[in-house]
Length: 377
Ligand code: PLP
Image (cartoon, rainbow, N blue to C red):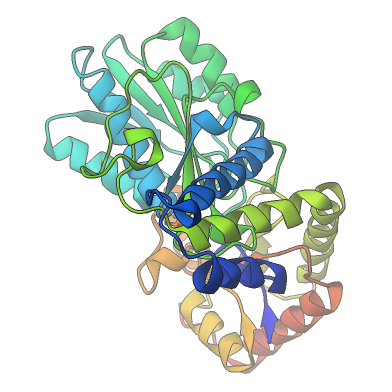
């Protein structure tokens, strides 16, 4: 199998699975239990928290484990609007956020909020000024992702943070960094966002575990789940200890050779951009500053057919986000591309283990797809 869909999810290395098994079968105690196995697990969770926090450039006390990136996004948005509930009912976000953010914003609209959605240009870029111009005195939250999951575009979150402090110091800033964490330089303190969402399964960790950075400007963050006093009383529910162990191990493995791994992904991406130019009617979509995501369009060839054809040959790519199966993606729609270009958008995404040979095989399959079929649009 040739797996070129690392933005959807990533394989779990043996060491991560082993760390999880150890917890599942051996050290299975509940961190809330008061006998040694439970007390030891509580300490262990704190050690794993420190590992993840260190990789994000924050303290363990500022990081709460969640069940996934989606939960982190939902929680940050709800907590920001709650903190500023007397300050206004306006939110600024982008038209290209993950649905975990967009659907939260649509829910806010149904509760009477006004949401401004900033559209990107045709290459997917959104300059900081465009976001800042939309901020009003009654803006309570700005939510802008760090790396777009379909295009690989990197958004200027640090610049938005600086501008927001001047324009409306009360407004809180959330960034969905699920595709940015351990892919591009990211340091919570330097970034200046009040909330940062991350997720384990994009970096070789298990599915079903994420974390939310909650910065010092957030006062008494409102929990999303009511219940026990886990996670400092902010996130109820027995800690997913095996998942947390796997998350920390994945972070440890990725950080051990981060510069080399990033360089390998960037090299594969540059190679792919070059190699894809050999496919007739293929157009690259944006430059996408992230090293692991490349978007392109086979103009006139519907993307779902391409994905199916390559899938039948054991080559896994995606037609935009895995969360939009079958439906045209809102990200591609926001680019305002010509219809034939928009319909043919595919995403290739890489991990540190992706090779140039993987790219060659994909490019050949795309050529065959092009040559063997009539365009349907
Ligand atoms: N945000 C972005 C940018 C993503 O790419 C994803 C997953 O595809 C998520 C949020 C959701 O993360 P999770 O799958 O952990 O809920």
